[in-house]
Length: 76
Image (cartoon, rainbow, N blue to C red; front, side, top):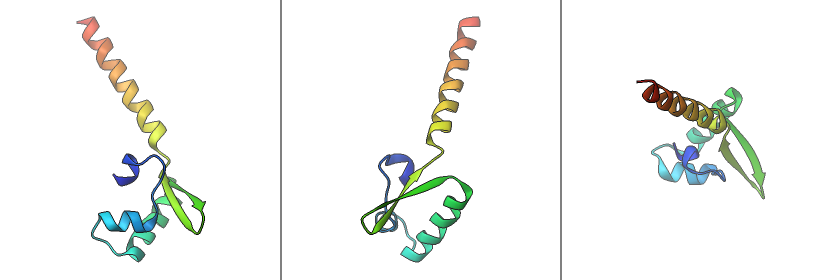
């Protein structure tokens, strides 16, 4: 959820400060999410910043659902 709200990315310290997990635990979860293709990382200085990569497909799906709902209401 944190990554979905922040489009510029967050580092491990920022993420771990918002949740009840240790920095190593957050790093592990981020590694799994990155391997799965849900997030990407970008190196800025000495820190990695993580960004959500499924945002565009989710926005497209939301737009499609909204469009279909509006079409359905017009047909009634």
